[in-house]
Every structure is written in structure tokens, then in C-alpha cells.
Length: 317
Image (cartoon, rainbow, N blue to C red):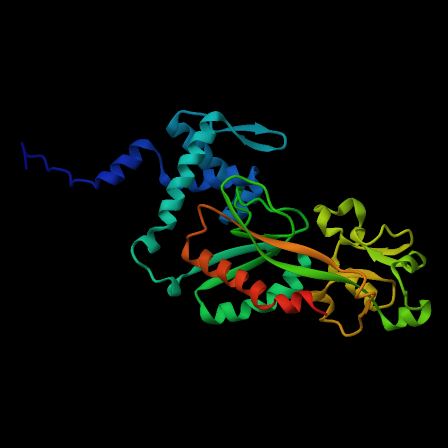
């Protein structure tokens, strides 16, 4: 007591510092809006209302006395100050995420969500059932498998790991080839009985085909039938490989399918198996900020191991 006045209890220095500068939690909202460019997607990822995201960004800009975003018709675009803060905020985020590993947490006890993005076919027909072993060995890790027709941006944190048929572009990505898979022509017994079995590639011109919707092919290497021929008589198109496979099995025509999916349907018969062999490489990419996180390392190692272990299944009829 001094002069009858009670001294205030000292506050932690860190708390005083952050109050003087800004609320650290606002950086979480800033990072998500910077990655998503729009309020609604950012709000969904953060599990809050879009007005909350807008309010927290406004508070952050006010506390720092700078403009972080330009509001454009197509979304929020980082200003020069925003780009500077984004680089700093990502480093802070990565340091925070690395705390368990830095303090010696065992990789076998890693927990958390890992979002894996890839194409629909390989996700549904190959990867999905092969995550069961991973879940049994690492019950604390939740895998979210996201399938898209377009390339995923790891820079915008749309996923943690991306498996693609092309070498992805982007800053600060760790990319490596993890495997290879073969595609072959398939048809149903009913179709071959009705139209006959082609004896050579030249005879394919007289057959009907199942193919992708051309203007919806987001990644050109996925339009793999063009590696064999440009069909003149297409009777069914779909943006879904699963739908194409079902149509081929029902007798609509001949189609080019990955072995990993066609093997799941006994109604499909290889056509010109020795003459038509198409291959696609598989690349796995991880953002450099995440590649050494325990849970991400566990999942990425699991994925790479799958392609090595199942090489014959993926490439031999």
C-alpha cells in the first residue's frame, strides 16, 4: 500500500504486449481470408459467421493502422502491407504448430486432421479403402479425403497433401514422384458380343466410346483417351470417371480406365491389352511449412508406401 492506494497485480508481459499491438487471434482470421479470398469460404473453414470474419479483419486493420485487403468484385486481395503480414503470420503459425514436435512429442502419438486432395478416381477406387490401416495404427489422426477435378492450391491451404497426375506449380512446395499407374481399354461382354472384339488399333475407329466431357476437363492429362485416339463416335460423356466406368460395364462402349478401378468390376474385359498401354505418374506435394509436422509426415509416408507396395496391382493386368 502506498498512500492508501493498493498496487495493481502485475500482468504477464506477453499479455501486455499483445494488447498493445493486436489480438493474436485476429491473425487466424487474417490467414484464412488471405488463403480463401472470400468471406464465406473463410468463415466455413473457421466455423464462424462471415460477419465475424469481417469484424475481426476490421479490428486487425484498425489496431495496426494499415489496410490489409483491397475489396474487389472477385474477392479480397492482399495489399502490400497485407503481403508483408501474411509472410510473418505464416511463420508464426508454423512455429505454433511445431510446438508439440519441438517439445519432444512422439510421432506415434501424433493427432489432428490431415486433408488429402486428389482426383476422384484414384481417391475413390484406390486410396479410400487403404486408409483403414493408417487409422488403426494412428487413431489420433483424422484423414479428410477431398476429390477435385482441378489442381489444388497448397499455398492457399486448400489441403495439406496433394496427389496429382501432373507436377504441380506453386511456391515453397515439396514435390516428389511417388508412383505410376497403367490404364487400359475396357468393354463389357455384352458390347463385345454385339460389336465384335477389335483385333488391332486400326479397328477401334469403327467402335463407340465412353469419354470425358471435353470442356470440363480441368487437367489435360486426365483426358487420357486422347493418348490412344481421338474418337469420332462417342456415345456417352461424363466428368466422373466412376460414371464412365459404370457406363462401359453396362455396354455403352469402349473406354480407357485405370487398372486400379477396372479391377474392381468383373464385368469389364481388357481390349487390346498388349497393344494399348497408357501410363500416368503420380506426384505428391506438401507445403514446406507442413512437411515436417508429425501427422503430415505419417500420412505422406503412408501414401508413398502404398504406391511402392501396390506397384504390381497398379500396373499389371
